Each structure stands twice: as structure tokens, then as C-alpha cells.
Length: 65
Image (cartoon, rainbow, N blue to C red; front, side, top):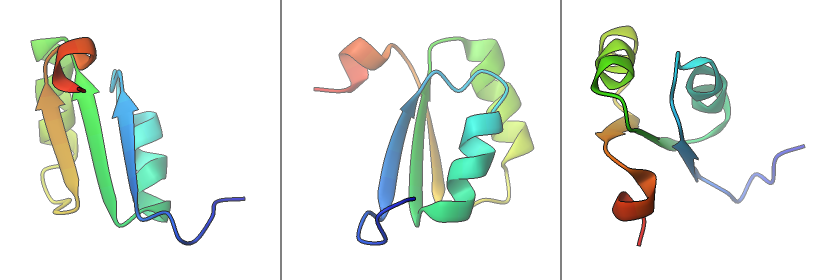
């Protein structure tokens, strides 16, 4: 069960975007971080119509601080 007070989620490691896709159903804002330029672009293509999703390309150990 997801606490309804939580509005945002940060995911590290987008890969094919399946977890991202599920998170979009439950959260107002989804942030996903992907190290691989290839998988980041795949996610941008797959989720191009999702305005509540931010895809960040980079190393999560450096992006999150």
C-alpha cells in the first residue's frame, strides 16, 4: 500500500522503464535517473507524453546530493 501523502518518487536505474511506468500510476511526480545515454533516450521516447515525469541522464551518485 502506498501512503497517499507521498506525491513524488525518485527512481535510480530506469533501464526499460517498467518501474517508471508503474510509478506514473501512483505518484504526481516521477523522477528517474539513468546512467546509460541509450536507455535514457529510450525512456524519453517511451514517455514523451508524460508531463509529470522527469528523466535525468547521469550518475545517480552525482545527481543526488
